[in-house]
Length: 491
Image 1 (cartoon, rainbow, N blue to C red):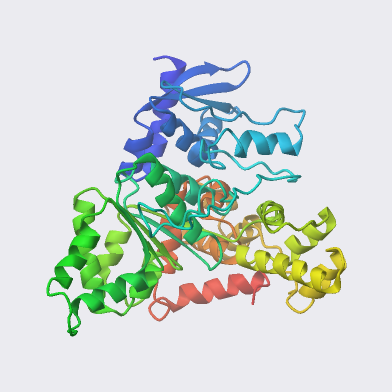
Image 2 (cartoon, helix red, strand yellow; image 1 turned 135 degrees about the vertical axis):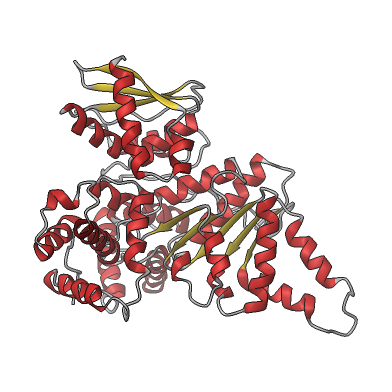
């Protein structure tokens, strides 16, 4: 057996043991190691399709390197290729780091492709001197063919960062291949993080790729109101209103629903949605759902709906990190026609970290106050606006702090927590460490996975093992979690 085949067999064995069968078979059985260069510590992994190479590069690069390190003792660089050669995987920066604007052009502005959508890439940790100019607003606010789509929300003007890159890339692939393995797609996260933007971007890109598609992009509240109107006795009501409602939502190619949590507690509407969901999925029509919580955390939602929501891909969007906030601010400054120097942008980014809407609000307030005072926008004005909302900085808790705290608390070696051992006591400590990383930091599941040498799916599984526990039934576990938090200075 050649070196390449031998190494690939080892990698496959490791991945098969830790990944769901569908994920493993979809992404790895069609790939192989094409070249092993021990002299320069380079390995080339080739897939049949560029999409597969892109996904492996973005989601599993760190894990593959870890397996190679454990197997060979060497730190290999991995290059990715595909037989169709439709896309280009970005090269990593050389020792001579290029200018930030060159990195931006390379990773965000290739042709007319959306930022980050042409490939799965690892975000550059570089100061952002400029970002993509915003796309001019379309006078036609809504699509003519699919009027529920807001044409101003596209992948082109969606700012990609560490907290949303996985959701963004999965969303783009849904728009490119609807009704496939990402069906349904469930995206969740806090308010003002871009979930609605991403939902409409999927619809707009899908409309571009499949002009004949009929797409419904609505809020769950609108679905509820239309359902109630279809069953409520009304004077002069169409006798076929209920049938018209069913036909409307079943004779479509894609259903994109915002704020699905609004259906909680509404039994009849949930039943109507359940049958709509089943009909669409059975016919391989794409479903995308947006929520403020993960499926398992939605109260008063029927179990049969929750299980169906979890059948496809679930991904979260987390608050933007510093680099992403800076990129958003520079993008919005161009959009709002406001000039701010670097010092002011850094000040805003350091003091506003919760969501994108708050960043927009600060910029609009600065512009308004500057116009009222007839002064140029400045750091002083930004300080005046933020003085009442600025919060004391949160203690900087990192995954390493959490892992070390769990290691000390349970008297388990850190290396064991980061290993793949399935010993009961180690697994519990590991799951709690992952749970706390998600709760006490702004890191996404893929980002947490890099610290534990695990993929997004495994991290989500470990998180849910703790998040789904009932505190009344497992008081000892939650008492331990509180004690670890206290040790970390969080409560």
